[in-house]
Amino acid sequence: MSDPKNLWQNLTTKGEKMSAAEVCAKAEKLDAENRRDTISGLVVASVLTLIGLAGLATLVEAGTPERIIVGIAVGLVWFGAYRTSVRRKGLPTEATFATCLEFYRKEVERRRNYYRAQPWGFLVIVIIAVFQFVIVMRRYNPPIQDMLLYPVILIGLVFAVLPFWIRQKRRFQREMDALDVFEKGSGPS
Amino acid sequence: MKADDLYEEAAAAHGRALERLVYAYEADPARRPDLLQEIHIALWRSFKKFEDRCSVRTWVYRIAHNTAASYVTRRRRANSLVSLEELDSISDSIDHSRDTGERVDTERLLLLVHRLKPVDRQLMLLYLEDMDAASIGEIMGISANNVRVQVHRIKKILSRRFQGGSQP
Image 1 (cartoon, chains in turn cyan, green):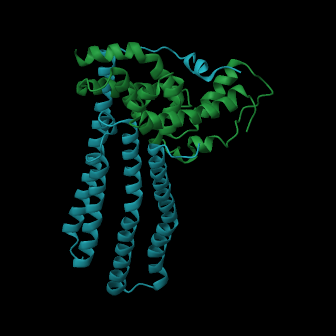
Image 2 (image 1 turned 135 degrees about the vertical axis):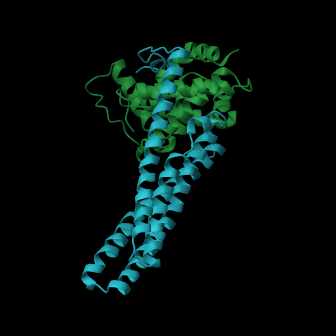
Image 3 (image 1 turned 45 degrees about the vertical axis):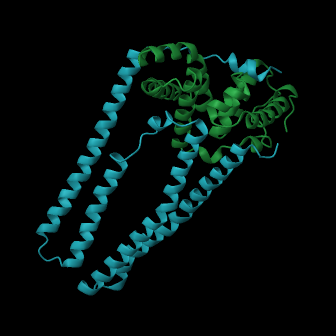
């Protein structure tokens, strides 16, 4: 059997070389692509927002609760697009400052926090669904079997997805605990 | 020295090590050029902020590993990754009865590395690159003593799988 260090250092690679000018060109191309994606995402969201706002303004028969619901939906669409595009943090920049362990911890922590916060977002969805349900029932009084389908599907989806989020949150928490052990070097040898 | 010159010098000195690192982080050959490009771009950008607080080698490995670790977590394969302790109890998936040549050993080593979580993988790679405990500690942000403990664990795993040749 071979020595793993020799094996590793003799690993056959393509031996690709890139000059600073080539890397610079690639970085600029990548930046341009990112900018294009960000702008197109925001444009689509803004168009949807405008359509929603126009609908809100021209919906003569709509009462205040309906306007609030549409307003919230429109706001959420735009904020979602803004958050995932403009406010997104670039990790490679962060990578410059931290040691590897620090960086990885930040990365895991960021993901853990995301999964930890999300169930509250689901709660908002359920509240909006219930709110809509009550408003429509009061105003239009449709047959109950027609009305039940929408909130039941929505709440069913939330409950179906919730265990996944909780599992992910726990997984990243375990990962963070393992990092603590790793940092102290106190794991079982 | 200018950032571009620093980059060119670092790429010439550590280019092969960066390629090996890409092999360790990306199992799919078709995706390796993308990761390599991502690392080179991160490195080129990073030299604008390089302030001589550490050696160029430490800097290069930090940036490369951080970019690769971020790449791994983004790919959502993290569920199947294991730590060094867990790795010790997992068997290889290579059929040793067919071939015992160097190619298979390299394949086994890559498979072993691919299964590790980013931090453990990084430690294993730096060890395989023949770095001493102090350098590994500086790159990773842990003490040299801690590195020695972890390296001891790595040596045990590797000797069991490569010198002993037997499967756990």
